[in-house]
Image 1 (spheres, one colour):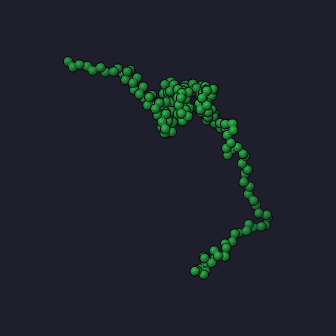
Image 2 (cartoon, one colour):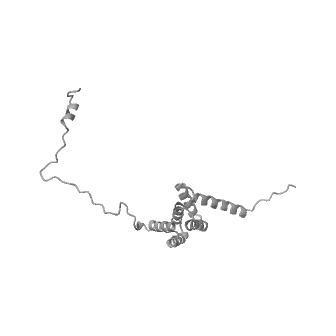
Image 3 (cartoon, helix red, strand yellow):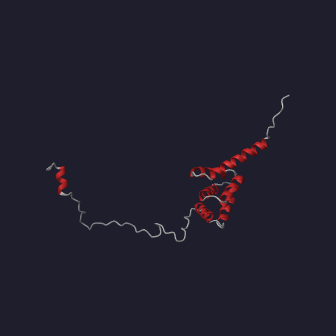
Length: 164
């Protein structure tokens, strides 16, 4: 008889693979590449409770603003029964002590409601002053706009004038 090697049961294999997947997605959520962060957040949005917990910990944890943005993206992409819970998490983030978390959550809510987020106080940008529309200046009735004539020197060059 051959000695049997200890084979992990299916539950143990599933738990270890699930743990490895979560760890991998969590590392990708903190990646320096925006596309990888967004993709990881989208994958986490499909993991129901586990994904919600990881996105919530990233949003409220000590992570970069870019990672928090990706987590908010994942929360926005939640579907089904988790959508309502994800909205509650985003609303909870509006009252968080971290300024970045509050900003990310307000921006996420604005995107969900198709409303432009308000500018921060004191932030003057190009939209601070109203733009004046450009008006067309029309010629008076019966007058033609004057055509611009080329200078005499330019006509000599093209007519085969004196060349030096």
